[in-house]
Length: 440
Image 1: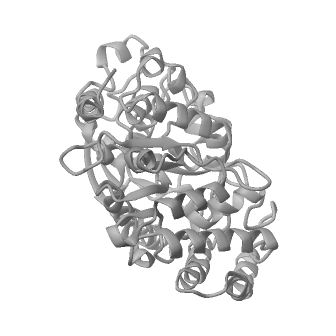
Image 2: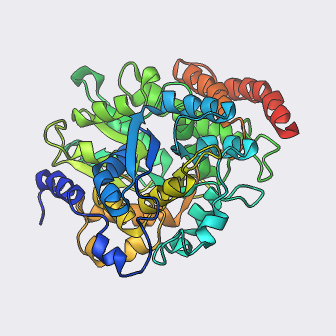
């Protein structure tokens, strides 16, 4: 049995393994050196996916002879910067890393990125073992624009789960909650502000907090807009129920100041050993098992998202890589995107705990199935979650404005406001924004 304290060391060692073995690639007859001498500038969003890419960057450079200049930037800065530069027609990068759940329709409407369908079909540009059909149906759907254009390659499908502190659960003789009602009851049993112990933590800061609410709403078998993206479903009885659950969990069971927490503050709080449960993406696993920063290395548990009254669903958020239409090195940029989303690189991603692979073959790999570096519970939670995955945010152009408007409403709820009143006001405020976006 592998000890928790050895897991991170194992995953770190995996980062040092070669993701691409040039000699093996050479046997396919594919010319990885066709753009040798060119330079590709890659704009990355700061997260574990970017860490994986940078850890193996030299392997790509050795394989292709292409120089890579890459930089990570926090998403709060990277997202608006990407849109501004793409809209200007003078992007400073040749590859952009972005969240489809945030920017898909924005970049699609602007047609700012290269449609890669022709590249994927070109045997001179796409290695025979790349296997586009190996991408999951959900990943393929996420990467495809409404008009059929494929202007990005899926890099990761971020499955949300529940991290829990085994020690705190054992002290209270508690079991992992299977429903949101049980989650709230469990959080209340753990919650003890007098001793500095809290039952639950999740994002409370406006904008970032919206996926927590929409994740709960999926338990009512409802999303926030109709399938055609034209009508809001944000002030229904189901939406109010999800708002009440969000309010109770954060107002009654979370640490002081949670209204200002994004994922990083939640992660830090959970690692201190005084929080029972944290709900967020699977890609945030590695630091929890790092004894240099975490006090709960031996006590981290992983559980599937709870079920709601009408459905059991897990929210998923997809990262991708795209190439600006204005790039002068599109071929070299495409080789980078292809390499980054290849079978070996996405297996590396899962092995280092950086998230879930959009490729089906990743989970058939015997080395992964035999022994995940993060334990069988982590892997089983991931595999179970993928079977019930649904989009965690609406696929609309003004998704950032959506998160801003409803994020304020959710923050107000944590402050004590009535969820029904807040959601009705937010819905009315967002209706004209959505309507205007549909005219363009």
